[in-house]
Image (spheres, rainbow, N blue to C red):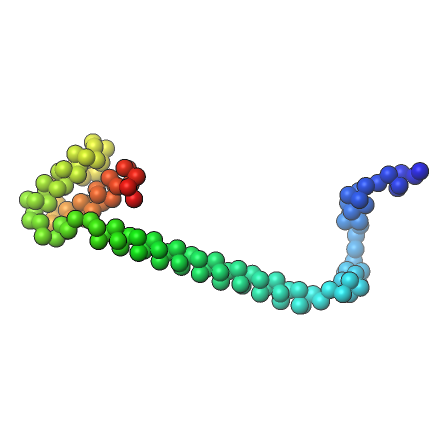
Amino acid sequence: MSSDDKKSFADFLVDALDDDVDEAEQKDAVRSLGINVSQLAARLRQQVADHDAAERKQRWARAARERDNELRRLAAEPADEQLSLPELFQVAQRLLEQAGPSAGMHYMKFETAKEEDLRQAIRALRHLLKERDGKR
């Protein structure tokens, strides 16, 4: 039994892949196997395009669901629009106490904030507290 008889399929494959093949041999092999390269390339391009379209559709659907969830969440938040400035300060103070000293550092001068800035700070604090408590 010669050493060639003991070679595994993997050994033959490695040997075949190590051989240098010129372009003419490649084209002959493809032709003899009946492979139409342009049709194969067109089919692969179509599969990639179909996959991209399906993935894009899923991303848009997920984004729409997330947007709807966020809109519902925002609609469920207390309406601060009717509160006066002193009432807004009380709400901000209560939220800062709940958030703790680390959050309070970021809102140290809320007493001097403009009304719209204070409303935004209250929204941000509520968002922070919901994320911290896992209520999002």
